[in-house]
Image (cartoon, rainbow, N blue to C red; front, side, top):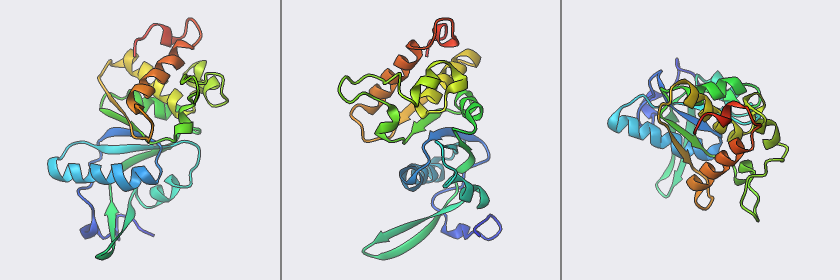
Length: 211
């Protein structure tokens, strides 16, 4: 198996991330691994920085277990008219499954050392009503997280309560970047997170902490 003792680092894309992490990414699917992670490696090669990635899968361990077993390394296959090329990516430093480790995910979002939270979840994962455009607060995924952080297992709920935790603990600024094919993705994400917290029970921590 691929690991740090046998990896062909001469085939590495960009730079390896340091142990320090600066990005939390929700949704560690193919688009993230083949594009955002690759561009992060290239950016660190050009300008350095503590931009290691904490990757979060929603429910499945299908992707993260092989990555953990490979010391967070994986390969990218590029096909072009010039031929086939396989290169190495080395930017992830921690990996979680949101459904199994919700507290760890919220702590990562709240960590002031993390300057950016990025998302590549499906449009369905936003639980947005396609007609009214509002958050479906009673959906099976969102309803448990609406009640408070202990039930926050859906990505949008974890983002919301992680930002509340961040506001309570450090008030450190953070960039939230939605990387999905959805109209006005950033504005929509902000609106849905706000709706979720406004729907939280009276007396919850969301009622007293601006996000």
